[in-house]
Figure 1 (cartoon, helix red, strand yellow):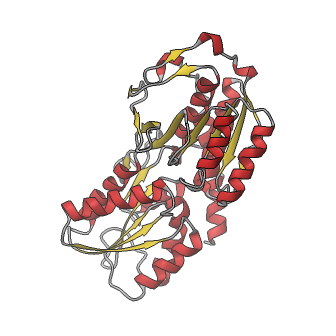
Figure 2 (cartoon, helix red, strand yellow):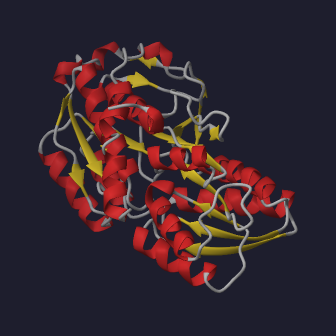
Figure 3 (tube, one colour):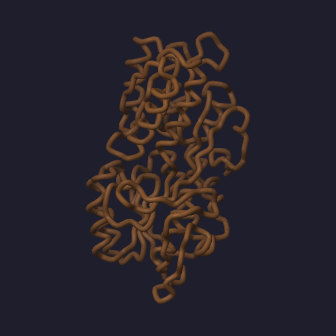
Length: 355
């Protein structure tokens, strides 16, 4: 099946994932250790919310942004149309500037680049507009909350699954994401650190893809057509899943678990297509990144930020922990479950949400 048609099929699940975001909003005391500055409190209808998106042709990003819109609507905030930087860090700064000129009270940003986004965040700081980032942590600026999963741990979880799948030996291809983002660095580091510690007899070939589908195909083709490889780690099945299927199919290696020519595949994200690959045996496991919860809590933290709610480190009521990033920013690290054939039909997984 063509890559574009598969991607459209994933994007079609956006409405389903967004629907889960239409849950009763948590009370202020339900997220971490929070207090409310009533002098600054705003009713949801008084909050104008801006969203500076990253790359809205990425199915995962589409699901997440649609979910933020649905959650903001449920809360009662007035959300402006999301902007799309199309993976251009410079354009994202311009997008942030344009949103600030529209007198937003709160701003959600999905950073294109962890360093390049900092000047935009600092502009919001000067305008006294609170910022929430989702999916990617910035390397500076004053941010109310980062909403993401522990990307290093997701890399570790993927390593544990792939190491077992290749029987702790052989060669694996590590298809990295963009190394200009904290996510790309953390996922690859978690994967390779775990491999070195727990599976020292596995040889790792690492190639960066910059979160680009075309580059995924190029890098995978170059390695898999010339080198015997027992397993592949995908830093994002949302971006890379179609590509790895195409390459392995063309090489006669797209076969289910148990087949003599099966190449083990483990990925991060958990799109509907990747969950089907798990059910069919083509993928050995997936680490599900919680797109729906990113949406729900990004919107809730944006509301809290505009209403003067103070947050601090500690356990939350939604199975996560608020801690500080290396840049000293509070981060709500949401759970990211491992998916195998045994739990691939779990309806709590965002990739299984129906339209």
